[in-house]
Length: 578
Image 1 (tube, one colour):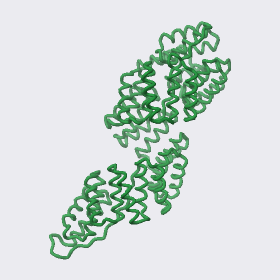
Image 2 (tube, rainbow, N blue to C red; image 1 turned 90 degrees about the vertical axis):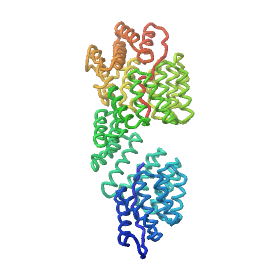
Image 3 (cartoon, rainbow, N blue to C red; image 1 turned 45 degrees about the vertical axis):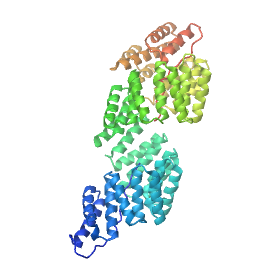
């Protein structure tokens, strides 16, 4: 959370007039230098001068001594020496127990130490001593946020803004609180209002950055992109905004630009672990799994407790079919953040691939206990119910509906509903669901592929629709070549040759997929013999959990007029948002 230094007020002091080691002018100079260096963030120098003044305690008035302790506490806080800061501010308050500024500083120190209840008491005492003290309302709002008491925090920040509508720190804290509540519209409105009062780069650039963040969280990537570019115009070399630009580009599927953004962020701040994490995720989007693992590993070398890096590296290992390493990393992430339901969803996905259904449902149960209102949990369980050998379509459909009720943008669940309807030969319903999923998630190539297959099964000529949907996709990134083949851009032989990749696991996946989807194309063209040959080959070379393996088996069964066994796998679900 943002921390904005407040200007420190200089205490009035006097010195005694009797014989002393230092002259009054020298003691005054020590105190002046103590204060000036604190204001300038020269904390080490400030501590030296403050200490010298404190050593002259018997030659200072109580005001002067209190000022020295206060300013040294502030310098220690700047150096993150919290125990020393706490000791000094208590000495200051022993001398002047009702000083509003020192009570505020005590709250700041307690909040940094994680003593949120005491911090709240300090801020409230400061406000009791000075009811219009803006910084204490700001600190109080931040402490309530730390405690997860978001509405109380909003009340405190709003009080500060009512006292001074130009108080930028309060807008920043209230923005954070609205984001915590996922109240994106009010968060956006706060920063728009803050921009009206902002003056200079140091106030304008953060406001544009925060606007971009709120729009990004709202999944409004267009407005997020516009605002982050405004922020970067003002601060082109700001690592955090370059990272956010990468996040926005990755959300839009612009992986090459995202990679460039993350690298630019790292050029400014080589130790920025979140940029390494984003870089790993962008490489996953490009299916450059080894580069992604390298980036995630670098992040973990800088911060071994960076849960996101374990999570994304686990995803990358999963994509490489290295489930042992994937499970190891996901377990590490769970140990660091055991109350994150998404991690259990991811771990359930690993066990799905291995067919260890008891572990799948155990992890889903844990996720549901942590967050029973998380629609994604129901969506993941729907996929598990559908993928498992019994293929319980009714239970899967019920859970998918529950997921969409709780999370209307869970397009993976919408795609699952389409797949179930396809297996039931309800082509109209399947097409409607998949078309809606494609509209909501237009950069997800597999949704476009399966919509085309559904249309083919229905006997619909969907070329115009297919061409329109492909306009949103990068056909150079897998599975783009499959769609390029469908539109006639490359031949079957060229497609099969493009399945070769540097990574053996990726080659296995791409050979499987290209074989199956060529089979679907041959079937749509009425080439049953060629289609059957491709489906038999796909059944042989595709790993058992893949949609293409079970899909090939189902198509062969239907072609033989046997009842198809409904089966589908989550290989092509979009990653759950984190």
